[in-house]
Length: 608
Image (cartoon, rainbow, N blue to C red; front, side):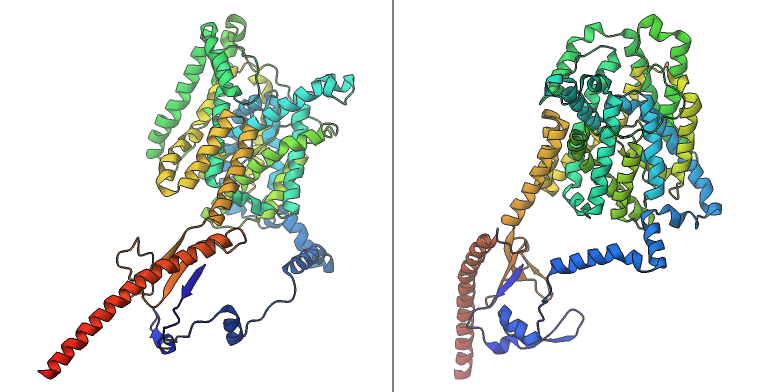
C-alpha cells in the first residue's frame, strides 16, 4: 500500500497543474481526495453479487456443461483422458525415434533404482520393478506432462517405509488391534505398501477434485530442498549396515538416526570384509563413470549419451556374485529369488485403509509439490502447457490403479526426469517404451538378478544421494539473499534430521506458514522521496539522490492492509508523518531563509 499525505497548507493550484509523464503526454493533476470523493468523481461501480456465489455458479456450470452437447462431452472426455487427444495427432515421423531412445534410456534407469529403493520401502526387490511399471503406464494415459518420469524416488520410498513399519507395528500388536489373529498373521509389508499407495491416490485425486493445487505454493523451494536434504541423511544412514554387512536392530522415535549411527559404529569390527570391498568397488565404479568417463566421452560426441552405469553395475555384480558364490563362501547378503511373471490385481485392505490415509497425507504433500513444480518447470522450458488440475487427477489415478497391484508409493524422480529430457523425449509415449523394457525383465529376466549383492543396491542409493547433499550449498546463497528463506531451509533440514521425516515435514510446513504470518503482520514500510528528473520514488535512506518533498509525504506499506496489521499501519504512518514534519519544517525554514536572503539582496540591488 502507498499513501500520499498532503499538508493542508498546500495550495490547490499546485495540485492541478499539468505535467508530462515518461511518454511525453500531458497529464492533468488533481487535488487530494479521500476514497469516497474519488469514487464519486470517477463513477465507482460496486458489484452486488458475492464472489462466493459467482464461484459456486461457475463450478456447477463447469460440471454440467459437458452434458449440454455431444461436442462438449467429447472435449470433457479428452480433457480427462489426454491420451485420446494427443495420440491420434502423434507425429510418428518426427517424434517416434526420439521417444523410443528416451523411453529405453529412462527404462534402463528404472531397473536398478526400482530394485534399490524397494529396500527403503521395506518390501522385496521384485516389487520395485512393479512399482516402476504400473504407475508410469497409467500416468501416460492421464498425464499432461511430456517429460516427467513417474517411478521410484528415494525420499518417497523412505517415507513409505516409515509409514509401513508404523502400521505393521500397530496391527501386529494384538492388544491394540481390532483384527482377528488370522488377519494379523497374514498382514505383509507389501499388502500395507499397496494399500498405502491406494490411499495416496485417493488423497491426490481429492486434491484435484477440490482444486487445491494452489496449496503447493506454500511448499517453497527452500522448504522442499531442506526437507529433501534432511531425508537424504536418513536414507544414507539406512544403507550403512548393508555397505559393511552387519545386522543393526531397528529403532524408531525422535532422534533415532543418531542411535542407528551409534549401533553401526560399534559393529564396525564385525563388518564383512568381502561386503566392504564389494561396496567400495561399486562406489568407485559409479564415481569414475559418472564424474570422469561420461564427461570425457560427451565432450567428443555431438550428442550427449547417458550411460547406464547403475544397470551395468547391477549386471556385472550379479554375474560376479553368481560365478564366485559370494553368498555361500563369504556370507554376503544377496537379493534372493525374484519370481517371473505379472502379479494378479487385488483390492486394498480396507481394514488398514484409515491408518494408511493418515500415513499417506505427508507423502501426498511431497509428491504433489515435487511433481507440480517439476512439470511446470519443464513445460516452461520446452514451451508447452500442462494442466495442474489434470496432473493431480493423473497422479491420483496412477496411484489408485497401481495400488491394485503389489507396489509401493512412487513419485516424479528428479534425476531420472532430467535423463528423460536429455535423451530427447518428445511426448508421453516414451513411457510406453520404458514399460516395455520393464515388462521384459518382469516376465523373463528377473530371476537372473537373484544373486545381486545387497551392498551394490546400497552403493547405488548412496551415489544417487549426491545431488541432494549438494543442496547444502544453497545455504551460502540464501543467507545474503533472504534470512527468512535461510531459516526455512535450516529448520526443514534440522527438524527432519533430528526428529523424523514425517514430523520434520509437519514442523517445517508450520514454520513456513508462521513466516508468512509474521511478514504480513510486521511488514516493511518506508517513506519515499523523488529522484530528480525521473518518475521514480525511492527510500532516501538507501538512495542518496532521492530528495524529500517538503510539501508531500509519500508512505509505502509493503503488505495488504489486514486486520492483523492495521495497528502496525496506524503506528508506522503516524511515526512517518512525525519524522516528515520535522524534516519538512527544517526544509521550509531553510527555503524561507534562502528566499529572505534573496529578497534582501534584490532590494539592495534596487537601492543601489
